[in-house]
Image (cartoon, rainbow over all chains, first blue to last red; front, side, top):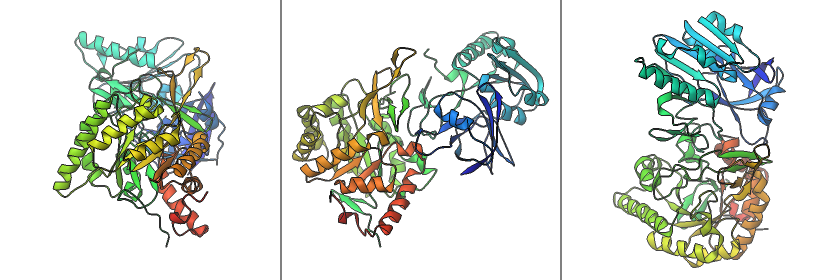
Length: 234
Length: 310
């Protein structure tokens, strides 16, 4: 059982949760969280926004019953955490771009801390949030509201590109990676997938991802996958 | 001293808590969180003869006190299991149950034969890795086979008879709550030489996305599990236990020691824990401890004292 330090509203339906305790975790890994008893049944996976000596932080968007309950948490409340789980972003060298869409910016803050000097691209559909926290960590910060943030990223200028955002954005990033390869520069494009999951540890097979080498698990083999490995069916 | 042990066809269960198929992988993932050898047993992820990719689209949806799943038996196939998972199972000190599904009668028989052959080879080498087969004739999430075998007794009888002939391993048959007559189905399993019946599998259910005006699941229907189905499961275990003399493995929505006691009082020999593994990743170790405490507090020294007393 852990204790909530703060749970701050950043934008419409978007919250920044800080939890006290001694936690670990790598870039792109996640925790399974629950702040209730038996119902809702399942814990909710949230990616690590930041880990430090004070505890662990998450950004989340209220989309259903579970995150609705998270939104009601106040300092001192109890919350259960299991993790860290999953394979996150790799430790890389070279020129890096971090590209986040909406709540997909959540895991990129920790990446920005671990990979200082990266170019950071943050896109939002209606309202920007948390952008100023990223600014001191970025070589260059690009923020876009209402457009397509991927349009701002030249995939041929980077060695590695980390992307987290909605499904169509991930698919578009994969295509841009392929196009860059055709243009003679092959960046390592890594996508952080967000799938429904039940257990979070690789046992339930709810979060299966179709990959070139067969079915893989978003929770245990991912959530981060090399873009070229993923087969997008829709 | 509290005696938690149970025995089914010579297979020893150190306690009545068995992890249900489809919710526990092959134990490896949970083994990173706690010592899974403390469990009574593990029923592995449902296997089919050939590897399956499972169902596309949404695979799980929460309901009131339950969960619908449409995983569709994604699994590595019997040979994939024998090659990749058995070495891990060899290291475990718990009852290891292979859950075997199939699309056709032929699939079930070939799968059982492969497992039998592996068991014989291991037996010659002085090792074991599979203690029991749990025949799944009741998966609601595969288009061919699966539940079709689990609804009508004559269809089920053909499968049970053929698999019984194909393996000497202790055989439990996992029954569907969607069976036309689950007690009759259990009697048939007993007559055909099954060593136990396990019940219930998930209940066929549905969820409609009203905005998109369609079922949330590509397969239309999905399997309901979790606390929502416990009263139904308990009633069926009670009904079946009164009708057969072979052991009953009871399951459906168990999340506490008192739930376990209810199933034992209804006549179950051991129980299985499914959806609770997702609610509490340490469900197994939590329940073993809770059950001991409960029995101590209630002055129950052995499960035999209370089994089937209702």
